[in-house]
Image: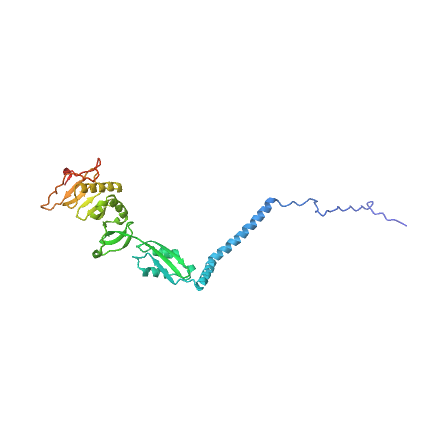
Length: 314
């Protein structure tokens, strides 16, 4: 029996295979996800949800879905018997009631829940006579309109037109020459806007109020008071200065009658001076002025009160 010997010596032994672990070839543990990564993932998810909700709401608003739902519900309530059938008007004396009815019934729908009370109120405020308006629903079928009207205080003459105004200068309605009410006449551009100031001046000298016929707003700065007896009193600029001048004039007229004596104009624009002007017509003369003897019930003249100085009479 013969044996064969391979060249190169003995055959190499097979190398044992390395044992592999179920954890992987490297044998290392996989890294756990960090807390920051988990928070980012959750925040991203919430942001996505919010974006989807916002888009959905925007689409609903674009297509007016809530309004359509509300309108449908309101119409259903109206069909159930809550529809406007009556308008109750309170406080309207000067405003034509027919115009109030026209505005109240001019609604897109008669269903009571859908009546736009604020829009109705704003339209009523467009009338010059309306100072304020309150509009409310009274179920089942009545709209209540409560009107607060303005009070006329004077007649404003401007650009050869007459208009009735209130104390705030709001134009109420045009006035015809042959139908002028017994109210003071204010003349001049923007004189209506200063009617409240004129009212405060008159309050400073209530004794003169029945004798006043009107006032002119001069140069946008001051007042000229016109009396029923024909005289004109020029007041200084500034409300406080005008009040003092008018009160002094009232005191002097009470002590020594000035109105109705034939004078033409009194000028108190210069502090401390009282200038009297007479008519320049031929034959006119300076009316005699009695000495300043205040009546018993008249207050004593304070220092610095301008008196009638003949040297200043022109």
